[in-house]
Length: 457
Ligand code: ARG
Image (cartoon, rainbow, N blue to C red; front, side, top):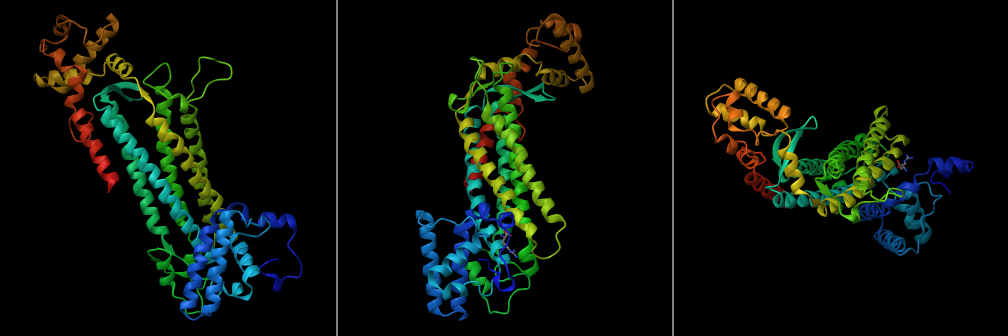
């Protein structure tokens, strides 16, 4: 039976009903739908729009439905058009006429807009907690590896010495921005559209603020047309989650490189790796690869939302039913990724010796060698050129800057002295990079503490 049966003389075609129905994906909002209805009914009663007896019957009926859904005694009818219809029809079947009064002064258009906001509000809270957890793990690890020297890269070429802790904190910074974006999205989704009606508000004396207050929302939407047709909060969340996936995907890419035998900077725990069906030696970083791969889904969800909305006239159009699968998938995907990713990072083994060896082999102290000459009075451009000749000499002779003789240094520039070897030691090079944001162990400890401080706030 349809909500609109008065106007129609026959049932909807069965396959078309399946096409039209959103129950397979909006049933996950059952709790939020009931929560919204409880608040609406309480307000209708308080405003004298429905009788206290009806209000009570509705409240008891809805509580019973919630309980039965949770216990499994009530199964959601997959032929219902959507979760709103299912709850209302079940209520009416259980309590009779009072159930038919619940929808007074309300439309499914403002109802669904509310339910999605309530549902996503919880998702944001859960996702935020996961991001905080990962950032916290990174800050801990950064402290642990504050002194672990590794090569920093540009163009995937060894560039300058950094510390592993410093590298990890770069990702912590990205996560802090992600958390900020989720907080921002939360603020805008946390207002109640109830009372917008189908599009033009309602003539009933609703107390919209009271409903918002009951639901823990910060206020009410200001324009009824916008109230029912705004899905910006879905787009904002999908965009914020897309950036989360960009960050996780870049991190995954590095994890994958680092556990290759070409790098061997880290080893993943067996519990977060997989083997090969044919090659007995293999230990594969599947989790990181899947996270990298799943980023595409979330970007796709964002694109689907933007595209669904971009041509819609005001106010509600059925196209908007497409918001749910996209944003739910984005939330589910990011949640699953973080659930696997964080413990994978937490349990990885860091091969500090291999990092140190790679750092020693790539002339990554060449800038420091040039800076040494600058400290002896040579202009930087000349110092750069002299150091370039030294690197060429090293390559020709299979040496490093550390293993050249002082004579060889002097052959290129007579400003070199024995103290050059100290100046180009990797420990010195890293410790000297003590500017705010730099990789020195002192800085890394300070930055890690700052990250933890922000996470606590
Ligand atoms: N299932 C619908 C949705 O998700 C609920 C709103 C239906 N409103 C309507 N006028 N058909 O958007």
